[in-house]
Amino acid sequence: MNHFAAIPRVPGDSILGLLDAYAADPNPNKFDLGVGVYKDAQGLTPILRSVKLAEQRLVDNLQSKSYIGGHGEPAFGRLLNDLVFGASNPLIAGQRVGATQTPGGTGALRLCADFIAHCLPSRGIWLSDPTWPIHESIFTEARLKVGHYPYVGADNRLNFDGMLAAFENIPLGDVVLLHACCHNPTGFDLSQAQWRQVLDVVKRRELLPLIDFAYQGFGDGLEQDAWAVRLFADELPELLVTSSCSKNFGLYRERTGALIACAANAEKLLDVRSQLSALARNLWSNPPAHGAAVVAQILGDAELKTLWEVEVEAMRSRIAELRVGLVAALAAHGLAEHFAHIAEQRGMFSYTGLNAHQVERLRDEHSVYMVSSGRANVAGADASRLDKLAAAIASVC
Ligand code: LMR
Image (cartoon, rainbow, N blue to C red; front, top):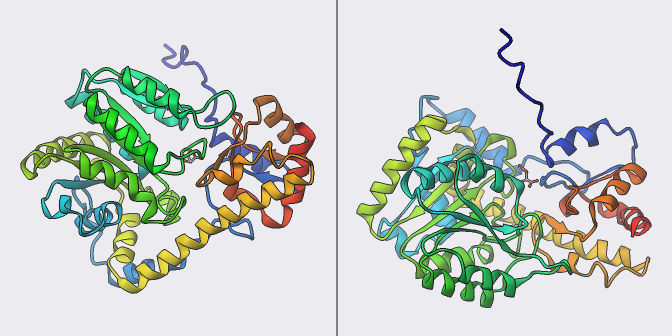
């Protein structure tokens, strides 16, 4: 019997598949605006200096590679909570918040999906339309009821009124997934006033927010980007946050992140954490240790932390400059107004407004690689070749 005979082939990942296509393209003037990875002026994804120093310390001082436990390295969890909520946040003193270390932000989302399925089984989850495609597949695979709220209108601008109206109709008690900053794939973020309006309807509909916080430091700054998370943590008794160290520590392949739960009191947090630890045991037993150990070294050492903050700020401001530079380069083709949103969006990604056909032409005619939805990773652009990129975009408009 041929056991695998009936197994069909599925299409490759719409984002990661671009890596192979880009690598196979012999054009020396190609652009990689696909996968969300930061690149420096030399087109490299560097290991941060703070990370190198922390790794050296680990090489010199690490005594064991034994298991680190279901919730991961305690120092990592504590320091990450400080980074996300602010060290003086009463949540922390009240022992109402706990981080469970996961293999990247994706692992945190996967654990969260199991948590909802097991512990809150009747709840649906609501995603922005559009959202990161893996949100869609993770929650669907976990057999959750997945709904969508509008986020971007036909004019390729934030559709906040549509979003808010949809929230009014989400069933009482359901889970809503929100992007803390640097919305993936669009780059359109909510203003503080808009976050307050969302909070208001979340309270009235008794919704449970799950805030995906994958890009802390890449929007307006490490503290500024945490604003909405902290507002929700101040105002609500319960909250889930998925945090990723892939981008802001450049630890992509080390798979470093956490699912952070905030509960109404310390006792309830222990109940929730017991479930998370049991669920994580089935998924990966113990989380990978190295990336979290690096993060703990950096955040736990004043000098390394300062160096890291400077490095994050350098990445953030370079992306912001690339955004402004690209719009300026598009101005030479009379397209500054058409693409003005690129400079207003935040984080790595821009929902350019280019359609799938234009994206295909950019790839086939100019070796410019971006996701077929029109999402471009601005951080993959090269400041010295923005005129060439703008000319390529103009030729398909
Ligand atoms: C992206 O959206 O490109 C990144 O988050 C990388 C990934 O895993 O998809």
